[in-house]
Length: 376
Ligand code: SF4
Image (cartoon, rainbow, N blue to C red; front, side, top):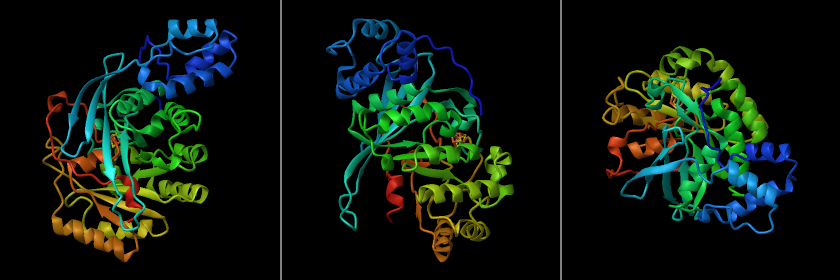
């Protein structure tokens, strides 16, 4: 999938590819690139490379003349009672995106293996071309894709607020439609010489861009994959996710099996429950059959019609949600039910859309981290 070209005048220092190209053109040794990023990561709160010692003058001049520490800025924050914080970020071309910091404390879990952590949900596009019928971001269309630097800048902004240990690519946009930039950002974020996040602490959520799923498996076999499935058959899936027309369900499930053979990872299945559309016993049994050979946890997300009044779906009945979950259990498929809007932010692909009118208003948000789902 191609993405719209944006006209960008500033370069982010976090666009490593651009730094590499410029240094190579000017015959500056690549050793100075690693040195730069080691310095930046260690001194990230300084927001500058000006005090870097023993650095070649020519390289320093190139950096000073061509790069900014951050090309984006945080315009405002919305904080929930439990600390969940949504940041509104303005990019250099005036586009706006959102990122969300979520806090989890699993120290009291059954196995006693939990920890306290902060997870960042990042955006990778401005809007999205996939036009899923339930998705606020999809209504914007695609305005453009983020650079690797803009993706990393979201992490850098979040570090001002929390010590982020986990990242989920579940904000605005389809990460596999901006894969080169997502890949470059992931390399910097997981490289043990730089930000050193654990691969197992990264989750990428896709609506099913089949050609890129195995590429992701090859590049990041230890990262997690979440699939926004939302329907157990092709006809229904096409109604909910129009792009499923091109990415057929049988091919998608074969690709998921290949992904599991390659990575041995369990995957997260996101399933939005829409009243009388995909939440009946028939769909639950079809889903059970579809997933019986897949190592996965299903995250059932009851549609919240109050939170999204402009989208014409109805919330499922409580008894239908419980029944759906019980049927999946008959098929030995673990599932969890997500309860609130905060949870929507935490786990559903692309549930963010910029709405400045809501900035600053507190909301009660209850959250389960997607990575904990597989441990239940
Ligand atoms: S759900 Fe994800 S893929 Fe679908 S329109 Fe929204 S952001 Fe795009």
